[in-house]
Structures are given as structure tokens and as C-alpha cells.
Image (tube, rainbow, N blue to C red; front, side, top):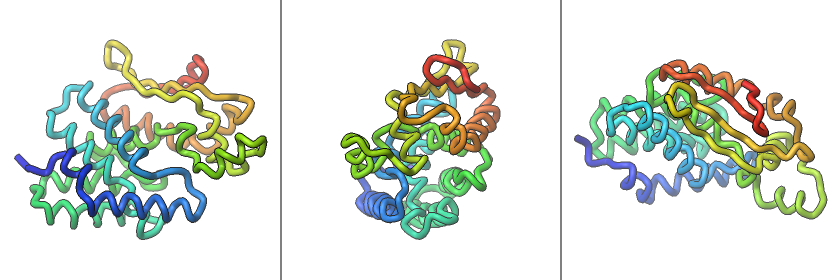
Length: 228
């Protein structure tokens, strides 16, 4: 059993530096928040999904680790960041002495999470895709844009506007564990449901495909109405 735990990864100063620098790089080109808040939430969701479905405890922890490290490639470039991140994760985890079989699961998940190339090649990857793509919320909008809106200005970028409109976001299983629901409350005075789909349709399709890989159904509810 590997001694490289999720808690150890969370406290690793090198990994924290890459996450922080990657988020700063994305901020400089106008992307939403990709800080420890995003990756921690993604890690929690990925772990919840596999735990609920009865996967082995270590697989659930590997999903946490993959989700926590999945965006470090953005420090290199936004383009192909999934592949860059997988290579970086390999070097970091290999150096820490993680077994190759575990590293393989993690880097496969990281390398397959980007919208353009995402494929749920294994359960860890499927959980990561859903955890990443379902993280839509107001607090992902950079503070400058939040301040602009609070002062009566319009959030110009559609990604910022849609995220800012989401006042509540939750993801959970039905009692029979056959359906995974992303439950959103959207302020329709800020963004419409159509705008949500304009930028997130591909991501929702990836969530559905990943859920199917895990043997469950994925559904989207917006303002208490089932949309997908």
C-alpha cells in the first residue's frame, strides 16, 4: 500500500505552489478561479461519487488525489493542460514513491479531463470529469468581476456571468444510487438557462457519458426543474 495519501498531497508544498501559480496564470488571461478551492471541491466530489458507488477505499483516495492535482498543467499553458498536468503529476508522484499502478490511474484521469479530449477511461477518470465539470458557482468568478457586478456593472464574459448567476450548487445521488443529480439555483436576472447551455452543454454531455461509465444516470436540475 502506498504511503502517499490525499492528506499528504494536500500539504505538499511543491504541489501547492504549482496549483497557486497555475491559478495565477489563468487569472492573468481572464479565466475563472482554478485555485485550491476548485481542486478541493473537485476532490471531495470525486471521492463522494466513488465512495457512494462502493469502490475500494484506495480507488476513492486516488480519485481525490487526481482531482486535487488535475489542473497543475495550467502553469505551463492552458492549451493541452491536461496532458502537461499528467506529465507533471507522473514526475511528482514517482518522486514520492507511489506505485506505478496507482500513478497510471491518476495520470490517465488527469490526461483525460479536458473538455476537448476528455474520455472516462477508468472509474477514477469518470469521477474526476464529473467533479470538475460540475463545479459551477458564484465564488469561481474573480473578485474584480464580482466587485464590478455588485457596483451595478454587467459581468461581460459569459463564463463569469453564468458562474456568477449560480447562487446554489449541489451534487448528490438519489436514494437508490442509480442517478447522480447536479442541482443548481440560477439567478435568471443575471444569466439565462440558455446561456448556461451555450457554454456548458459539452461539459454536461461529458458528465452524462462519465456517469454511464460508472453505471448510473446523470441529471441536471435548474431552479427545481429537470433540464437534462
